[in-house]
Image (tube, rainbow, N blue to C red; front, top):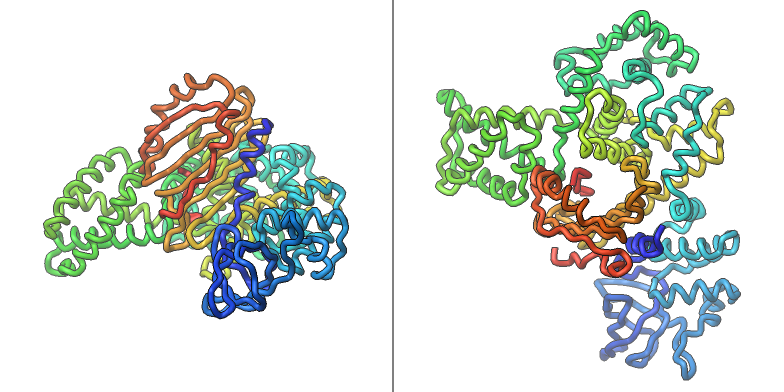
Length: 636
């Protein structure tokens, strides 16, 4: 990869969160003001803190401090080293000895790097970092990784170091190729790994969609997992009043299986595949109908944070009350002046967030113009505080209720991603939809969200069933002596997924930073796709999709190193494409599609530029978002 691109890709990693110093931390600071009472204002990194000092200091001089206590915004600082000699350098050797560590060249060099970058650290973390550095074979790589861990205050553990180091030196694209030779799976878990790799790469399944669908349903039926059954209901493929127990009974009779037993073995699965060729499995519909139903359900998932969905639910409820009161005047409750005011407030908030615009692609073509008409009518009526029901409003209310009733839990969404990925060849997705499905597959099926989904399940009522991921399946294979998967390759992939997971999310009081890595196969890239995102944090603790910055780093087969920079301000998107080839004509060719695609999700293209990489490498900076969920849906 071009060195300019490589350095740009590290921008996200080198930015430090501006967190308040913690008790026990060691840090460099410069005295900028002395205050009576043995207090001072100390410059620490980009922030100034007020501190109580244990000894008198000199204004304008730099010291190494340790935070001994913190109370009511006032820190107690202890000087553990200061500038020495005419060169005014900190005595790093003395500092290391004072912290109880040897002043070897390697240790001095690492501590110097921490002090020069003004990175605060705990003494225990420094000791652990130096121990890891001593044991590492690649000192330069290890130093870079440990510096990143210190700057981002990651847990200083060998496992975390290994995960970050693997992410720095290995690509998902290459490891998937190394895992791919599982052409002759020895266990059912091997087959599962092969299927998941196909989903992540966007490759066709190794068996027919009917056979792979049958295998998935049988596996869930015997393990008492209702997820696919619930998706069939949400997609309208099974009646709402149907029971999962009856569904299980039908499938157990067909497969000769029994609920509560283990997953079918590879040999049993081969027998079921043979049985399926003789007697079709009791799927709820044809594969074509299942594919269309699952794709429709996939498209209906709202690309909005939870707070926005709640506002929309309240808004829809009030619209339903209005049309019901008009048709059944005797029994339906009337809208009070207070409820109209609350409805108007939700209406205004949803308009500002372009929510109604984002809903249009999810509606049928016949309902879209009706929705636009109702929005115009309601906007006028809200100003006059006299909403009047119309037949068009009833149609819109019904459509919105149907979409909202189709929303899924996080585990159901992961399972839906797996289904849509498997069935993609049966509904011929557009290029945009194809890439979206592959991106979602990496997020939902790789394992980067395993722990967060488990935590969410524990804290909610979603249940503990979880869609199998590549990470969980590889961990299982490492315990199985019969697997055809090389343990070292499995360990490396698990470590890489952990590295992506650890470094995926970073936040301060005002902003959230996210970094993700995707296999390049999804767009024909020769290496991984890197995505960095930063945005101001909403009151819900999510990225504000109206004000954020997204950068994609790609290595394309024909255009080679490419950077796509999206700067979003008030839902207006400025796009800059960086490449050292003449790509202006190609970019202009796709401009109409870009304009239309952004419009469909409630955004507007403000600018579109093409610039050379070498001359503009330093210009791709993450902007200052201080003027400002995981809420940014990947659709953006």
